[in-house]
Each structure stands twice: as structure tokens, then as C-alpha cells.
Amino acid sequence: MNAAEPGFADRLLGRVRLSGLLSLAAPLLAIVFAGVVTSVVLLISGDPPLETLGIMIDYGTQPRSIVLTLNSATTFYLSAIAVAIGFRMNLFNIGVDGQYRLAALIAAAVGGAIALPGPLHIAMIILVAMLVGAGWASIAALLKVKRGVSEVISTIMLNAIATSLGAWLLNKERLAVEVAGSNNIGTKPIAESGQVPGMAIIPGTEAKVFGLLILAVVVGVAYHVLLNRTRFGFDLRATGRSETAAVASGVNVKKMVIIAMLLSGGAAGLIGMPQLLGSSYSYSLDFPTGLGFTGIAIALLGRNHPVGIAFGALLWAFLDTSSSILQLHEISPEIVLIMQGTIVLSVIIAYELVHRYQITAEQRRVSKELAGTTTPPREGASA
Figure (tube, rainbow, N blue to C red):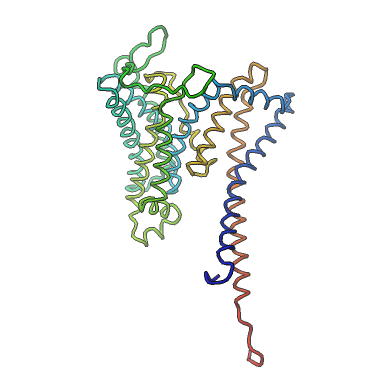
């Protein structure tokens, strides 16, 4: 197709719009399909689907529930961004869970041991968390570029090591102290100068939204700018699409692997900060776990786009928050896990179907244009 042809711009714009609509339709259809599957499960178990949905919406839209949803979505979003950085380069950083837990533990210990003016204290804790997360991720990066070890295998194993290392560090002889009034143990509480106050932005409740919600927004903007407005981001995405083409264009793939894993690990270090600095002020045995694996699901749901990830994090957090009311109505809260799992599987299938449709449509378009531009043989010419 020639750019000078009449209607070229309109046809190009039409294809872009169609591609955008298909990409938007994929997660929406997946959510609808997950709702259908969940409804069937509810009917089999003897629970009314519409009434269950109404209970969840009614509870999930209450002021306190909105605060809980936003707080959960903040940590989910940071986790998904950490995973998405690797995904955009075709790296599967499965070790986000171990990276953020070890980072939160070390940062909490450092934060409880030092005394600095407010902003410096907070900045020091966050910096330590990012350095620990990046440092732990660098092990998998070096194993990959130096020995060719798959990052999937190494990060899974590093998760187990991080868990054991954290358990070894979290005891009374090393980093932990007894939590007053309980059998729990945790790091020394962070002083007020290192705490981030919450924001009372939801009327009708005294509960506060994590102050580090702003940090999640900044991270999302930085992620978008880095990947879409810089040369580094272009090289990263190009390497993820075709390593051979990236090498041919002069990209140092091994260097890109190390930098991408460091960035992913650094972002992973931020995951526990909203909870640590905004609520618990100490890393103890009941510190939230499993956020790294939740981030993988949300990154897939949001297709590694910062806005898509935000909607995915809010949906996931809403479902988690709403599930707590189901047991009071004698409805199994595990129904939410079924819905979440079905959403992830449905989204993956939907995106693959959309991708195949786009390839087929493009092949048909090119074939049609080639057929239209082929000059027929002149009359009398030999075959």
C-alpha cells in the first residue's frame, strides 16, 4: 500500500482502531466468561449467582471497603509492574515474591535501627528495599548471562532460599524482637519519622488510604516513560520481540538482561513499602505474602500496560475485599479464587485468539493488495 494513495490514512487509522478494540475486548470477554463459569459453580453448590454478586458489590462499595480495596490495589500494582518489566523483555521474573519479602525484612530492620529526619528516614528505608530487591534479582541475571541458567528455574529456587533466609534472620538472636501482647515476633518498630501517614480521602470512614499510593502512581508513570519514550525502553522491547534482530542492530543483549532484572528487582523491593511504612511499621511473621505471584496474574490481565495493570489491580483487590463478606452469608469465599483463576486463563486464551486473528487479517489484507497491484499479462504475450 502506497502512502500517497487516496484513503491511505483512513484505512490505516481504521486498522489501528480495530486493533485497539480487539485488545480491549479480550479482557472484557474474559471477565464475562469467568463470571459465567463462576455462576455455574455457584448454581451447582446451591448458591444464587445474582444474589452473591449483589452481596459482593454492596459490601465492596462501602467506604471502608473502598479504602481496603485501594490499599490492596497499591501493593498489587507495584507487584505487577515489577513483573511486567521482565515480561516486556521476555524475561520471566518469578522471583518477585522472594525479592520483595527479603527487601521488606532488611528495610524494616534498617529503618528500626536508625534515626533520621522524616523525609530522609523514609527515603533511606525505600532505597534499602530497592537495593536488596535488585541485588537478589541480580543473582538470577548473572546466572542467565554467565551460565545460561533459565531465569524461571533460578528465580523459583531463589524464592525458597529467600524464605529460608528470612526465617533465619527473623529471630530474637538476630533481627527480631517480641511483639508486645502477642506470641508474634518482628523487627524493631520504625520510628514515627520513618512512617508515611495515610490519606483520609474517602468520606464516611476513618480508615485511611496508604500514603504511598502516590508512589505507585509515580512508578507507573516512570514505567511508561522508560519503556515508551527512551532509547533504553526501545532496546528492551526490541530484545523481547527478537533477540537476533536486537543483536544485529547493535544491542548488547546480556547487558539488557542484567539491567532489566535489576529494574524488576528494584521495583519488587517497593511492593512491601506501603504496608511497612503505612500500617505495620515492622516486619513480622504475619507480613503479607504471595504478592509476587498475584502480580504475575495482574500483569497478564493488564497486558503489561500501566493503565491496564491499574484496572487489573483494582479488580483483583475488589474481589479479595468482597470475598470476606461471603462466609457470613454461608457462601464459600473460595468462589472468588475460582473466578480469579478463570479470569487469568480466559485472558491468556483471549489474547492469543486476538493475536492469531490479527495475523490472519493482516495476511489476507496483504494478499488482497498484492493481487490488486499485479499487472495482468498483455494480450499476445507468451505464457
